[in-house]
Length: 464
Image (cartoon, rainbow, N blue to C red; front, side, top):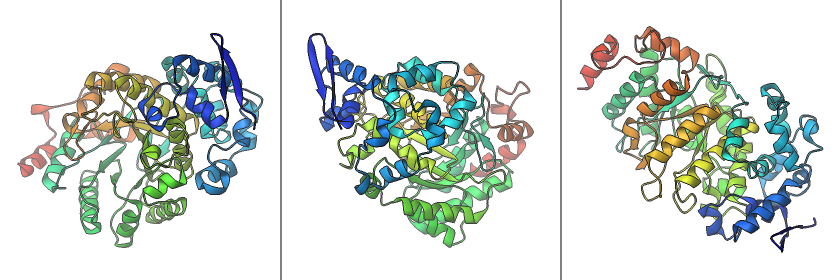
């Protein structure tokens, strides 16, 4: 394939491949600098973006960034492409596609029909030409609705993962966090624990505990232990009550191999989950987590920029009709997203790309303590993602995960976003909150303190 050239300020810039062009057109971030593929100056970045705007969308079907013969993710993308769905935009360049997405013709129905015709590389490319407000405007048009025991992703709703992690997997500590989260209206996306160990017997005990809580209080939600997919399969074989099957995924075969998985492994986990038949409203049962920089950290990026690698992970997720997908946006560290500005931009990019591909996107709005970021940055990203129509966020006691040692969003942060933006929980979960006398009649303010529902008051007394 021919390269690309563009003149800016009296200098002619040349980019030898689509892979290089995408990398040089990316907004600045530390991971691409670490990989040695970032633009060397703002002028070079602008030249690359101007070149990229003129690239036909069809070229992404003809020029694979990672070779088809050696990468099963590339084969999944190319072999699974829906040419009929792509037809309405097949004549457009990347720049034309941006203009079309921002126009009135791109509405919720149109974008849902288009999703199977888009590749990750196409949506990553167009995101590189967009301002923050563009990423928000387009993403809020898209709704990706999924169901297991409740309905997630409806317009005007924002769900939360209740994340009751504990450094020793102590049952009382986990139960106390679950109770706290439920009283703030958290947990409709999932009650999901990152276990301290990957011991199968311990995982089974945690699954039984979560299932007992959900069944005892008839909570219309689902549970998940965020263990390796093979451990979930082993737990199912032991008869444990597995609702959702979890796995971290990435955008190349080699990066997924570093996680100890392949597409075949994920298919096995998906089939095992379906065999349980535990969903009451639907069978979306996979839960995937991703993050910019994961492929680079495994030296499995093949020279592809980290944001495009991230978008390729959503093609993997899309294959298995997940209930939940979230980018753990600032978790990998400042080597990949240096500061609050880069984290905010990355979170909005990921949400935009995932939604366009038909993936039910959430975000772990987070940072590590050695990043140049703070909770004010997370407040900004939370507000922007809530405006953009995020499916779900994390809810953690005090926003400080004591097991994983990072900063994320709290139960209170979810309450803030719902109140300020007029967002509500999943409808089935909202009905349960009202029945348990946790929500006031206005459907927004939560009952706290003296007004603890009697079943939860007794539970709290037992924990004490």
